[in-house]
Image (cartoon, rainbow, N blue to C red; front, side, top):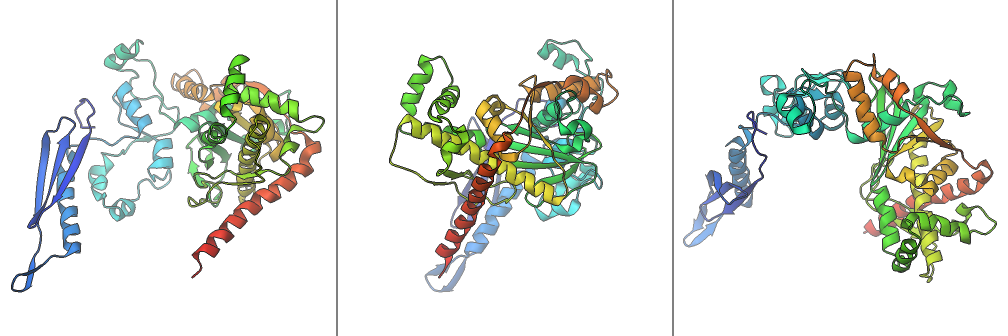
Length: 463
C-alpha cells in the first residue's frame, strides 16, 4: 500500500540465472516489467577450456538482484498494515495501529514497544527507520475512537453518516472472546458468578479453535501464545491456546467415510444438517447407555495438521485406533463422535497446561460455528468437567466488534462496562458428573496416543 491511495495490485519476481549474470525483474499482472536488476557471476578457468562457477556465488547474486528489486516495489510502500488496521485506515484515514494486531502478530511489546534487534535479524531493519513510521508508531488499545470517525469517502461507500465513531480493532477470534467472556452470569448457578473474570475461558470454535484466557498478572504457559497485555480486554493479560483445523477435521472425517452419501441423502430427506442427523442417529443407537460410551474402544488423536497447543509440535499427525471393517452409518456416527471427543480432550489438555502455569479456570464460554452443535458442546462440558456458557447471540465475534464501537461512541465508560451490558447468556450446559470416570479413562488413552506416536517416530529415526 503506497502513501497515496491506489488500487491494490499483485507483482511477481522472475529470476534468470545466465552464464555471466543473474537478472531479475518485477512484473505486474498485465505482464509489464516494472523494475529490473542484474548482478555479474564470477567465473574461473583453472586450465584451458575448463570453466567453473560457484553455486554459493550464484545464490548470493540471486539475493542481490532480488533485494535491489525490493528497494525499487519496497521503498515506494508508505505503510504496512495488518488487515484490521488497514480497514480502520480505510474508514478513518488514521494510521494508528491496534495493540491487538501488533502484539499478537507483529512481535510488538505493550511495555517495551518495537524490538530493533528482531527486524535486523530477519533483514528488515528498514522498518526501524523514521521512528517505525511504516509499521506504526501510534498504538492504541481496543475500543479507542479513531480520529474524527468515518471520512466522507468511507461514509459514502458504507452508506453511513460522516463522523460516526470508529474503534481501534481486534483480531476476529479476540473479538469473539470479548463478545462472550464478560457476560452477566447471575442467576445461573455458576461458580464464576462469585469469581473474577479471570476464571473464565473463552473458546472460539469454528474451522479452527482458539482458547482465550485472561489474567491480572502475566502468566507464561509452555505451548500457549502470550501473555499479551491488553490484547483483548484492556488492562488484563491474554494467553491464547489453539487447535488447528477442528471444524475442518470433523468435516474431513465425516465426508471421507464410505457412508457419507447415505448420510447426505437421509439428512436431506429430513431437512436437517448432516450433523443434526448424526446427533439424532447417535441417540438412536446408544440404547440405554450415555451416548459418549459408544466410543469405549475407538480413540482419536486429532492433530491431523500438527499441534498448536499445548505441545506446539507441527510434526504431529492424526491417529485413530479401534477401526473395524464396518462402513455403515452407525460406524460413521461413532467415528464422528470419537472425533468430537478428541477435540474436547484437546481443550482439556490446553486447560491443564494453563492451570499448571497459574490460571484458575472454572467455566467455559463457547462461541463460533461449532458452538451450534449440541453434541460438541455437551462433550466439552463432560470431558472438561466444567459448565459451558453459550451466548444469546450466536455471532459473538460481531457482538464483540459492536462492543468496541459502543465504547468508541462514548456511550460506555470502558470496554468492560460495555461487555457486561451487551453480552447476554443464552444457555448453560452442565457436565454429566456421573460419566466422569469414563472420560478420565479415555483421557488417559488420549495422552498415551501422542506418547506412542513420539515413540514410533523415534524408532523410525534410529540408525
